[in-house]
Amino acid sequence: MDYLVCPCHDVRLEARQSQKGWPYVKCPIQPCLLFCGQDQALDYMKAVYCQPHPEVLDMWSCLQCFCLEPATLQQSHSPQNPDRLFVTCSKKKCHFFRWADQPLGPKYWTWFHDHPPKKADQQAEPPLPSRDAQGYPKRGYDIPGPSPRVRRPEEVERECPLTDYEKQLLREIQDLKNRQEVLVAPAPPSPKYSDSVENWQKGLETVAYDRSGLF
Image (cartoon, rainbow, N blue to C red; front, side, top):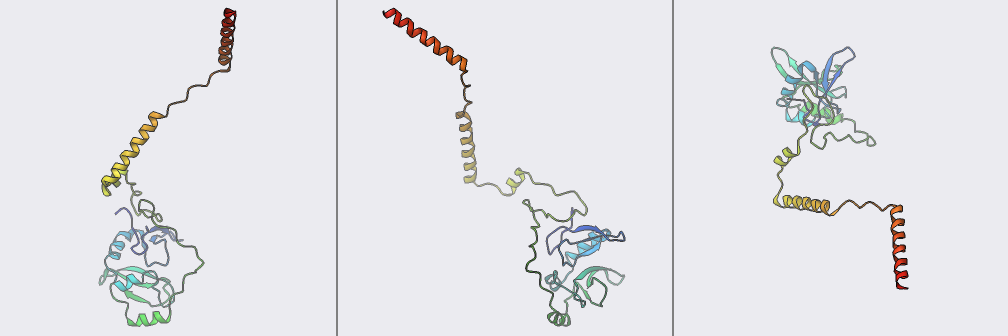
């Protein structure tokens, strides 16, 4: 795995550092449940891709705790539930807690409908596109690994081979370019003014000689 990608927003996770120097990773698009330390990122993301319940996945960008704050997805390290994911209050102000691999429950849904999340600002700028022309995420950092390799035209052609009609068009375009290169020749150098005057004077002498010979 060269980099870690948020399964909801389809962008790379960003590596950041807290004010106390603790390195962590999170999704650059908020609100989002993802949040963990950099040293636990690989094991954390493996669990993220297989453990969460469909209800948790559907509420990924709007799941909130009883403080009306966005919830966060964390991983248990207890002997009873090793590596098990759970959602909890991001500010640690309330006692909101749900295992991520279980349904949220009717009590939470009743509370959620009575406390809907705030609507996004309609005048806010739309998010920037998260993918470039090659299909790679534009935001975030590699964790870890090199930058994505740009595919060569030969590789793209192997993945999406051209049809016979497209190949024929390319051959005709190349033939037309070759003909234009043959037909277009460099222009001859312009005659010098002194040469033109000299030739004009020679022409006058020839006409005068012919006239003198006639008479």
